[in-house]
Image (cartoon, rainbow, N blue to C red; front, side, top):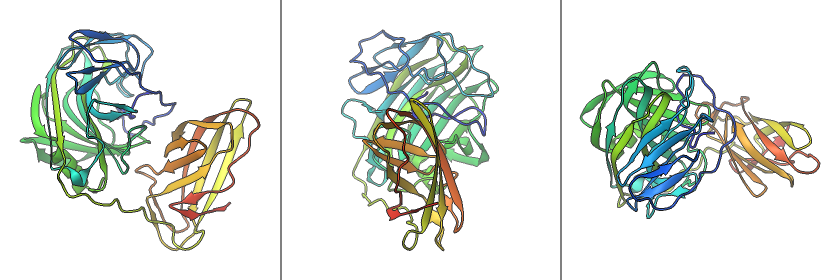
Length: 373
C-alpha cells in the first residue's frame, strides 16, 4: 500500500490493505536510477527522493538528480475515478521511519518561526496526473505510520481527477487564489488547495498553508509538522514529468506549547468496548465498537489495550492503529472522533496469528478503563 495514505481521487473511496516499510537508499550523485517499489536515495545531502510506487505492480523508474528527479518509466495505469498509481516525490522530514539527513522535523507548529520552500516542475502533455505538494501533520511527533492531517497543494491538474471530499470555498495564499477542498480518505483528513491553472514554479511560505488549515479548525498549534513533500500522482502516462528543483527550510524559535489532552470519558468506566473477532489458522480480523456510557461528549479518542502473544496488526480501517510489542493504540480518524453520550464509534483491523487465538481482556479510552459489552 502507499506511504502516508495520500489522497484518493474520488470522494468516498476508502483505503484498505497493509502498509509496507520504505526501502532505504544511500547518497545519490547525479542520474541515479530507482526502480524498486519503495526505493529511495538522498540528494544534495539534505533531501530524500522516493519512487513510492504504491498503487500498481507495473514497473516505474525515476532518475534522481542533484536537484530533484524525473519519471523515466511508468507502465502503470489506473481509472480516473480511483486512486493514482504512485507518488514519486522528494521530501524533507520523516516518512515511514525514513528521515532526511539532519532534519529538525518533527517540530511542533507553535515552535515554527518560519517555514519556506521553493519548487519547480516540468510538465508533459497527454497524461493524467496532478503535481502535488504535501504537508503532513500529526498530534504527536510521529516518524512512522499514517499522520492524521494531510495538506495537499495541487499546482497542476491534468485529466478528469479531483481531490478528496468536496469544495468548501476559496482562499488567497502565496499571492494566488486557491479552490479549497476538504474530506477524509478513511485514514486521515485531507485539505486540498487547487490552483486554477498550472503553476510551474512557486516560492512560498509553507507556514501560510499550515496556519490556514489551523484556522479552519483542522489542527492546533500543538500539532507537529512531520514532513513536506513534492512530486506527482500519475493515473495514466507521465514519463518525462520532473521536479527540477526543490528546497525547504523550517526554522524554530516560536512559542512551544504543551499538547492538550483529548477529552477523557467523564466519570469512572464511562465507556464500554465490544470486541468481535474472527480467526483462522494464521490470521484474524477484529471489529471494535466503543460506546460512550457517560453524560458528556467525547471529543477525540485514543483506545489502548494489549494483544495476546502471537498476534500482530497488519492493516486497519476507520482508525489509525499502531502496535508496539503487545500494546495496541487506536486513534480516531476525522469522521468518528466525536462520540455523543450513548453514541458509538467503530473501527476494525486484520492481523496475523501464531498459535491459538484469544481476545484482549481490558481496554482504556483516553486513560479511563472501559467495561466490556
